[in-house]
Image (tube, rainbow, N blue to C red):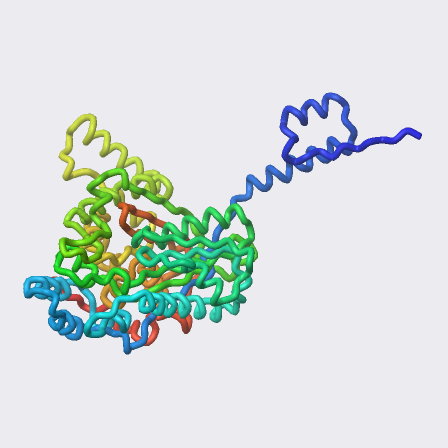
Length: 459
């Protein structure tokens, strides 16, 4: 008895030329139908862009017992017998002009005399900030830790073994097949870098849930020497962390706050001047610290220009792009205008809100000037610096939390998050608000948001 063999067409092996051959050679109706169906499904999959959503996030707020008023910090500095009077006076001047309030926090180990730097101290610090942030986020969204598919942690200066991501998996008993990543040494820009990594992974693994944890460990890099470029970090960095929940499941859109539109990363590590402007090193007395050179502001300006040059075509209206191109041609080719009069695109036509990394007063002021921003535009970052200090990679989330607490995030609003980091890097992320966002009980600004904004002296 004759047997009829039916060949099932592979979705991968079938090409347009093979389909044409199949049709012309008189293939069976079933084969032709299967081929057309597979092509249709492939076309629909390619055509449908994977959307990535931000479901929710939480920020860490230290207890009042961790507060470090300026007077207390300066007194602690004065009691340090390892510092000379010039180093003490330098830190006092920086603190006075820093925009930081008496509400910022540092780990208890750094308030001890003599100061206590140890592995156990930094482990306690990171476990406190990370575990609290994650617990708040999971509890708020009624999620089981086992529902997390992708885990990304970033902390620049503390990279233990096992990693921080492994520490989180162990604490919350996450699944054994979770995709985990631990980023270190990436500086303050690592928060957006983590968002970019999560975005790429979520698009490949559709329908997945990603948890990002951004923090920095102060105990590790608190400097106890006399080098002024290294003393700056003690004056600016404070305790903080953020946990962020992202998804590529279309069913999560109804519960999401924001949709991720763009992530742009620029890196200038090939340039020695940029590479060395924020650098972990040892001073002349063999004491370890992170040096911040005077080049950092000019390098940040160059990196901002590079990043916005890449971001502009993605977000700016055509008219703004056209004006910029015309001005650029006149400047570079015809040399009609001086470079000082070059046209700066109006990024306020692309964004309603800005969350600038709170690297310091100089960083925020430089962004205000370079982008022609108003006082209201820089208010979230300025108030974040005042209330929480420079919390490194998590600072952009404190700024976004401020906007939510002020009930300014409305449906359709676009927000730009931008951060600078060692390397040197400038990273930016663009989000679109899906619905009017009301602050919830876990918003760390609630309880004192009505007293903001506050006047910060311009010394």
